[in-house]
Image 1 (cartoon, one colour):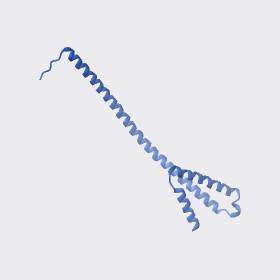
Image 2 (tube, rainbow, N blue to C red):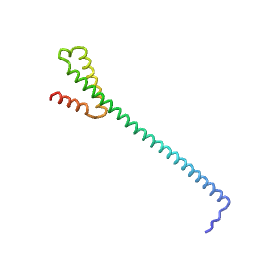
Image 3 (cartoon, helix red, strand yellow):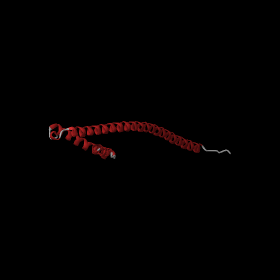
Image 4 (spheres, rainbow, N blue to C red):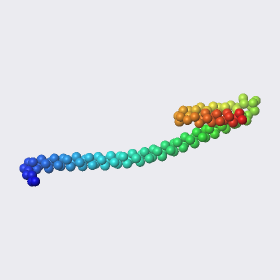
Length: 129
């Protein structure tokens, strides 16, 4: 099958094909840009996951350190003689224990766990034994 086109029809066809090729080229460039953005996002997500792990480890370390200090304050306070509980050292241990209590309670609120209260329950059981 042979198609005969006039010069005008041929020019119109070439113009339309050039426009279509231009749109196709533009779409390919946009696709490449989106792929590049996607790759960058994948890298960024990986970095965020790593940072999240680091922060979780730092949070856990801080929480464990505070639990240790809380236990230390309780132990030291129990070691004091009843008459010395009113002295300055006793007040410092009470203050440290109170501060640790406030911080640990707030940390539990933030991370949604009950570790501190379970820890307190365990300490109470250990004291009663």
